[in-house]
Amino acid sequence: MKKIGLITFNDYLNYGNRLQNYALQEVVKYLGFEVETIKIILEANVNNDIRSRLTRIRNLSFEEFSSKLLNKIWRIAHKKRINYNIALRKELFKKFTDNFIIESNYIITNNNIPDELNDAYDFFITGSDQVWNPNYNYGSSVYFLTFASKHKRIAYAPSFGVSHIAPEYTNKYKMWLSEMYRLSVREEDGAKIIKELTGMDVPVLIDPTLLLTKEKWLSIAKEAKNKPKQNYLLTYFLGVMTKKYNKQIKNIAKKNKLKIINLGNIRDWKTYITDPSEFIDYINSCSIFCTDSFHGVVFSILFEKPFIAFERKGGTFSMISRIDTLLKKFNLESRKAENIKLNKDVFDVNFSHVPQVLELERKKAFNYLKESLNVI
Image 1 (cartoon, one colour):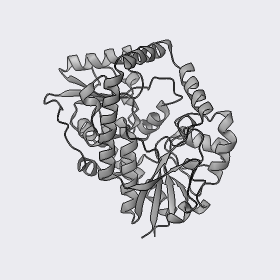
Image 2 (tube, one colour):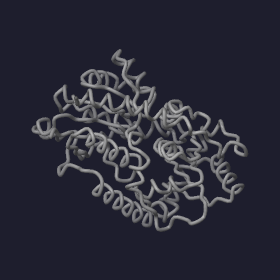
Image 3 (tube, helix red, strand yellow):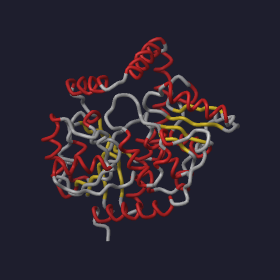
Image 4 (cartoon, rainbow, N blue to C red):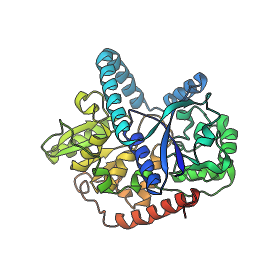
């Protein structure tokens, strides 16, 4: 049986990362391959890391900067409890990984890649996640599979996470992208970047989490011990929840007599330690989901749950691009926060057309993978 090496971020604190990793693994296994996710630890370039932080800070609004500053002060005051909860959450995420994701028993770094790595796998697939975001990958070529023979380098729906590549990375990205065997991206901005850098037109494919059925996802879901018995509004924000967002959400909850459950907010000690399996169940069981997370929107669509997609605040370039592409693809642009009249439209979502769109997009994705992996 041929063997595939998956290259993605190994993030044991992020739901989307763990779930997209699992999804791509399952899809490639379904196509008849042995699959292993290669563990990577990036050795950060200090100058690049500082530059990325400064870039994010410069793009913060006054409200966002103030919120982050107050949050920093709060974190300092609660450092011991925060460290304990982060460690516990990471332990739960690693347990999920051990149960559902096959990882390599070795670790590579951008400066230490074994000579025999290329021969150990028949193909390598990079993606999906923001593996091509220079603010996250520190400009490393690992996520462009430069260690592998050219005919083994496949990209499945990776994200740049930004709308343009900074000048200091342009030449490298142009070379690395041009040397890929098969290219695809997750959002339209990514396709534009590749077109500008290489002149190539590449397909925009759906995230691997959308390739699995609702039933498949629920088969690995579990109910959190502290999940409320009453109806609840679920939130999951990776960026800053502004005063405006917070007011909108509280109004929805109050008018509809819903308890508010915040996932991903470390100030909510009990729900912060929710693991990926519980994350799936929380979304499937909620009355409405408010989020600025790409994967939050993905699971809302898969489970046909009323949702509101908020623009992520926090100073990162064009974080809404991925969600815009997703909503446009499924004709659900009406679910963006600015398009919703809270009293009228909040629970009114038409998902009747989604199965047909999913069928077409899944066919497109599977055909891409089959052609790339030489599946007859």
